[in-house]
Image 1 (cartoon, helix red, strand yellow):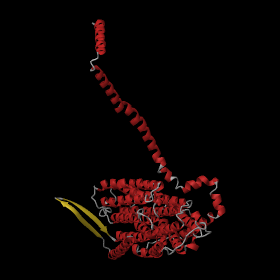
Image 2 (spheres, helix red, strand yellow):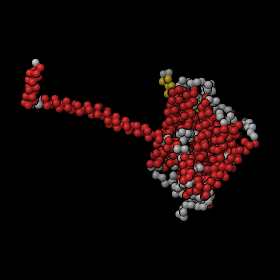
Image 3 (cartoon, one colour):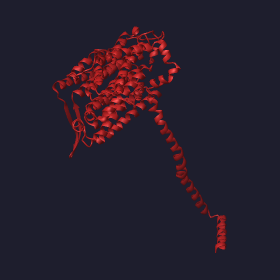
Image 4 (cartoon, helix red, strand yellow):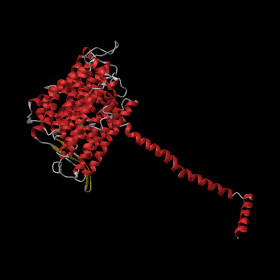
Length: 569
């Protein structure tokens, strides 16, 4: 079944990319209205937008999905519920397609909610307590974005349904400010930006093919795509400055956290978070085409990196701690080759896919009206990217083999290594091809030689620091109790997982328990249902005794009557 799905998606991807090139060449986009139901004067219309951007994104999503499905045939081999897994991945692709081709917030919500629901099902695929907690954190974080989209729909009803037509004409309208804020909030939850960053590393509890598809190239980039569409309404507003600040902070925080993480998949997840910060911050400068360019190039090499990590974890008997690896280049030459290829593209190695988008983003940021804090965040985040990449290579690929004598680490499975070939070609060639297509007219970049060479210097410095810090003596000093609080603070994403889970819910749960104890089980019970029941039982018992025809009751009643008459009459 996975082969059939893979071939269908690969064919669809080729078709979409071909139509995207035709649309780019002709400068024509198609807006399709499909009338579903028409009764009297009312009609329900489904609208679709097929321009070069949506078609190109669709092509990339289907290309990566087809490779992931082929890869899943080897990774999920022997799983009793493999068909269920394939269906979930296909449902995810359908939701992503619905999101991409929708120019209407109502139909976008269908795809948006579909992404949230299916990602929850995929995160809890391995049924244990850790996966359940990660899935709940993922679902509840994304529900904030769903509520924001619902509120945005109610505001959008003032103007009409399809936002594509009039964003340019109403971008100065004051009533659009709240709409822009809601769209930005929704995108921040999907992109896991501060303060919603905790769910992305937690979602690594899902199977690795899911991480390669969902948490690198589709789900988390859905927020970027929505902001790219809405950028004309946000251009030059205070929300652009917020995007720049939040994106830069997330980029720095994720890069710092990845340098203290030992879980292989979480390191790559934090790397994804850092690159999402890059996309969000450049949107703050009003350059949506660069953000979209980096989105596509990043999707290819990050999916490849997750696939390589999956092969390593699969061969290492499900160990994810990079300290348990080492010397993998001797046993897995093909996987480590692709892994280094993806790492070099991630670091922005000249003439790799990441270089064309990342270098241009940094140069445009340095040339723009940027303050010192944002400038330093860009520089440090770039250096930290290379630093944690060098650390990852040092621990897993080079050095001594740490897995013990009983191991089966090899590259024998063609189902796992074959899909990497196409993505590996993309990691090398896609950057230059996309730069010719998306940016046909080059940007005019005027920088001094110091700023021009700053990116390369920072990358080399980051690689050197990443290698030096992880040598034995330096690592021992860093992990000593003297710097324990600093290491914990940096390695736990500035305590965001704790702040967004226990600290938020603890007070709500405590207050809810107090209300339940004092209210529902206390005063409400004592003065409400229980008290009413007790009084009714007493009254009915008294009436029952009065109706028993007891001579004692009659004599006592006569006695009371006689005393009353004698006393008061």
